[in-house]
Length: 189
Image 1: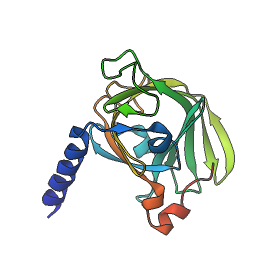
Image 2: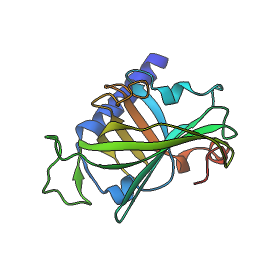
Image 3: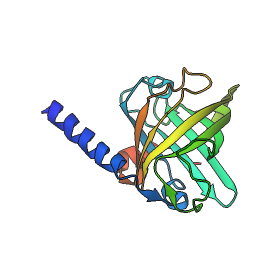
């Protein structure tokens, strides 16, 4: 049964990715926290920091006007102790996947972005316990995006490849689709 479920999941992912849809980042990137789960590739550090099995990892993108920011969120001991990394992102128009003539609100998949992280902190609930000196660049290719589901791949390892290595494919589901216990366990901005 598990193999059948995995095969079906892979078929669904392939169908969505192969569609190469257009998406509006103000509707498909901007919004609440999206829960992340690894589909394939090397296990990222943000998934390994947790000490309990029901920890949530995810990202919250802001795409309003000129602000394009991201918060990476990884629970260590649930919401009680978690990591947040803060940064910005922008289209990577140096790759062949991105058409510079594209409309800002009508982006063709796959679309490449550069993510720059400039600080991180460990929190106890809403209290910042300690700042972590971190900075670096990550690379994100959007393979599929709609307002409730996104599929990303890291085409290149991050500058500190302990965080993410090339080939990491992730699905992100809007936190609104999770059950109430999981929703209550997530951070407030």
